[in-house]
Amino acid sequence: MEKLPAFHNEPYTDFSAPANRRAMEEALAQVRAQFGREYDLRIGGERLKTGDMLRSVNPSNPQEIVGVHHRATTELARRAVESAYAYFPEWSATPEEERVRLLLRAGSILRRRKLEFDAWLVLEAGKTWPEADADVSEAIDFCEYYSREMQRLSGPQQPTVQLPGERGELRYLPLGAGVIIPPWNFPLAILVGMSVASLVAGNTAIVKPSSETPTIAAKFGEVLLEAGFPEKSFSVLTGSGAAVGDVLVEHPKTRFVAFTGSRDVGLRINELAARTQPGQIWIKRVIAEMGGKDAIVVDADCDLDKAVEGVAVSAFGYSGQKCSACSRAIVDAKVYDAFLEKLQARVSRITVGDAAKAENYMGPVISGGAQRTILQYIETGKQEGRLLPVNVAAPAEGYFVAPTVIADVDSKARIFQEEIFGPVLAVTKARDFDHAMKLANDSQYGLTGAIFSNVPEHIDRARRQFFVGNLYVNRKCTGAMVGAHPFGGFNMSGTDSKGGGSDYMLLFLQAKSIAERVA
Ligand code: NAD
Image (cartoon, rainbow, N blue to C red; front, side):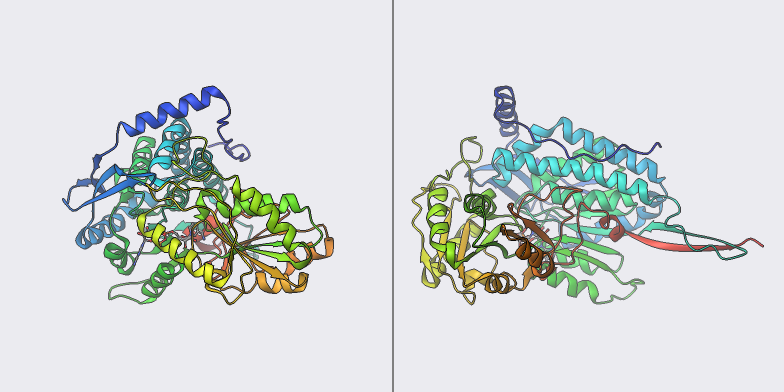
């Protein structure tokens, strides 16, 4: 296979063009026409029904059932691992270039069906049109980027020192059967990224989607099959994480777990995977990307309008349900009042409503449970700080929460320390830049962060001292692009796996060194 051309990010759909708007409306209608369809479990080559049904709903209108899915049992979870383990020798022996070809084909299918996938994300995950389109674009990027990475990592690597009388080389091999556990908030991009990195490396995969977004996962399963991935190379195992998760993670034939989700579940997986099971002959590898409590520092000398805009879109895009979302604004005392005034005006212009309606900037949150948790945090926040009146109405039906800003928040406050995962922003006053840096790092997490400043010395200090995996300067802290911003965090934000970067594929491979005596 010839070397692939340089990687480029997939362009976003321009929804201001009337033709694209019409096409998106049509895609939404076509997807709605499939509402309520039943989806089988797919384990290796088998399609199975358990009769224990999981119904996913449209969070903008929970009366609407998006998909009806058979839930896996623990017995089927075991079977999925056995099946992935049994097929691994065959799949891992497939030439790398064949696997790359299949992955490029999967990317092309996603590109062809982009608006359809956008529509599934709007209707099952409550993403607005642009947020859905960014998610699908990122999924395509992962297919393209990891294809190139696998091409780069095929064959002998990094010239080793050649000793006299010896020919030496190093090659990468796949690991085995892996369990892929994505969250619902990037229901396509993250699921695709972790799954295709596993598969293109030559691993078999059991994909356990989030119970909130199983239809999107089932649809992506169809894409992999259409692209030509063998039926037995992957399973889509819908089911409750709590019920089947432990079985998948603990199984002695599981070689690795790639997880993205909350801190508590990630830590549990890490612990369970570390316990050696009878018959297990390896140390399981765990990739765990977890939560965030991301801060934007607003310096006294900065472009305040840009800072306000950066904070508002980072805090309220996708209703604050991004691991990278800004949930703490740390503002220098000299510009604190002016910042709040401008932020109040900016947030007051946000519109909240049905994600399928293009005019809404914010859609719903994912579920009734999430809505309740977020509203409780808002009540806590009102005790811990001062609620900034923004007067944005949220519809009563559906899982909506209005954008919420709590000012004057102390760093000990729960809403300063705990991940809320909703449209709630805590604003804290810093005495000076030193204090701002201390506040920014006063967190168990370390995922993304941003600084708005015109002071080169402060920017330089943030580069060195702001302890986050993804730092942004004079821009928002969300919207990492594959290839440009390899993604992953420090401390309780996870294993810093750097998805979409050139370190990532190595997590799905192991290196073998070979030395041959030639004289
Ligand atoms: P979650 O931890 O509740 O669930 C994540 C996945 O784990 C789901 O598929 C779920 O079914 C599964 N699961 C639940 N219990 C399990 C168990 N005992 N064993 C195995 N699997 C289990 O997280 P979520 O609500 O889906 O996603 C939101 C969280 O994800 C937030 O904390 C967010 O910050 C984080 N996140 C992090 C990143 C990142 O790159 N760091 C990206 C996106 C989301």
